[in-house]
Length: 172
Image (cartoon, rainbow, N blue to C red):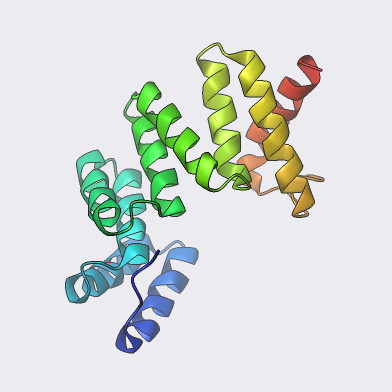
């Protein structure tokens, strides 16, 4: 449930995405801010600003952006995933677990979110449920052609995926 992007923002949005992908976060953030200034309900731009704020250590700024999105799109999966990540970063493990559970109830095939949920469950000591969630994450990812090898696994996920696979093996 994303707010439609006005045609005038499409080139700006494309440029902001490209800058973000190139690691030019400050420049991308400026463009995303311009989009939000013109269209305060723009879900993608606000999510990008939330991620940039979280990376910069601005948890309050990240939360403000996420709250603005949740006010107009309470079931947006990307926003819920970012909220769970923020809650986890702030030490709100119970909140993060609850948010991941709600997200995965709505979108059960989001394997990266399920992986994060599984590893958080493991960290809380619930190894059995963690192993089940890890198995489901791996199964969904592999059905999508991911996590089949190091080459099909994003570099930033290789460690967590390897841990999830070991967790599943331990609980067979």
